[in-house]
Amino acid sequence: MSGDDSATYVGHATVLIEVEGVRLLTDPFLRSHLGPLVRKGPVPTAESTQGIDAVLISHLHHDHADLGSLRRLGRGAQLLVPPGSRRFFAHHGFEAVTELAPGASTRVGNLTVTATEAVHPGGRRLFARHVEAIGFLVRGRRRIYFAGDTDFFEGMGELDPELDLALLPVWGWGPDIGPGHLDPAEAARAAAALSPRLAVPIHWGTLYPLALERFNGDPLRRPGGEFAAAARELAPQVATRVLSPGESVSLA
Image 1 (cartoon, rainbow, N blue to C red):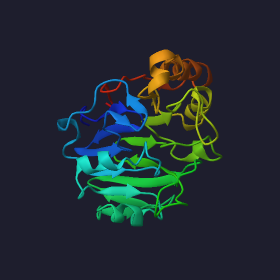
Image 2: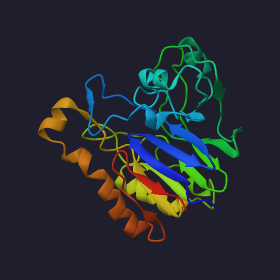
Image 3: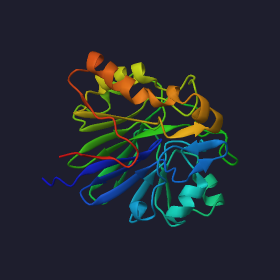
Image 4: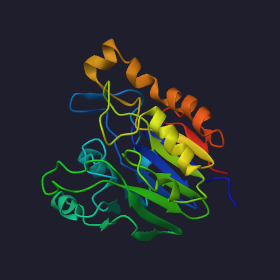
């Protein structure tokens, strides 16, 4: 079994998953800013996102389905998307689009990618007002859960009993979060239910409203460490790794 399998936290909800020679990119946000939100940390280089075999898009909020970032990957990129959103992507010139409802699967190389339930409002875009959110399970010689954006839901712990990695959102981009999100404590509860070998917090510490970053950035700097601390209490069987944008972890 190769030791080359890895996950790289690109930032926000974007993770580069490399397993069995297949490169998957989740919810790409690859730019320096999004409206009034500014990126804290390095902007991903073009080289770091070359050769992507498939893009996993959990829902259509602007920080998860950023058209500028998707165009950087190329209009021929293979997109795996929530049901009902193909029209939205086709309208913007993307044709290699596969919709996946929860429970549905597709193959990418030697990997099977399956959509899962998610509890999060997923629409708000023209041609896709009522599209729901999904998560993803990636199965090959490694088993990885990318939650996208979700609240805790009944049955989360039954998604896969042999997970190697869970990528769990622990915050957002503002000073507080509302329903449909995991905070550090709820993400630790999710880690306890999922019981992966390793849990990595995502969706935190990358995008800041300009004024908040300048005058009071602490609410966005703390969630990763708070998740790790809560997971030590609620999920002691799960290893945690808090990654900075650009940092990788081996799945060997």
